[in-house]
Length: 248
Image (tube, rainbow, N blue to C red; front, side, top):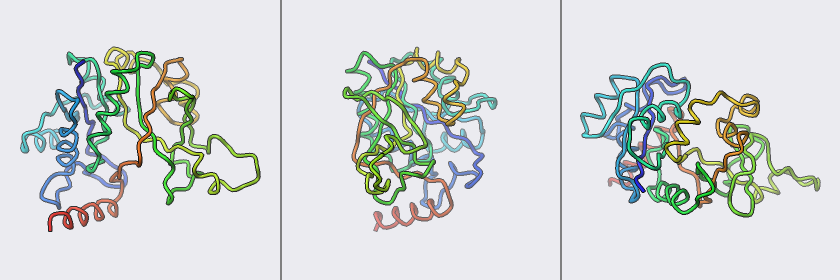
């Protein structure tokens, strides 16, 4: 099977404008992501999808592969689907453009889930809940899976909810933190992009619920930990320090 990773990248960011082009490490942030993704063994190609000419030119400058997409897309999934429509590939992996330290093995794991599991059209990852994270935090999305590793539900609320009177922190080991990386069978991704948001998705603002609400299976691979995303200036500062330390 042929697998391609598409990394959606946009210039606008409320908390960190121009994030893909930050380059205090000597490389653009999006270049760090691209190079990490290219290390995955199960990919035949890696493409950065953007609607911004500055990002496109930056990618070309370091020898990466970029594709210009419509400015009208409301989500990264839509942007990835536009690129996927022109590809001859079996599996499309949607990698976030702000995780420069993503482990290539995570991508291989996603591809493997779809290559070996024929009953799901989509795959994603989760990890044990980190010690520093709060299960009650709505920004930390939780997922519950069945005995075969397929998603039952994703929620911003703590699921499963403990009724024994103990605190959520005492039940931390019962929670799985969802990691926002996805693999799709190409034909399914094109259908998904054409579907309107479902009722559950509108309530929780979680796009993957559109898939479950339609009765489509999502395979969930459990890995050791989540990747570190760059969302704020402080996140980027910490990343720069880590890179400088490794380079010494």
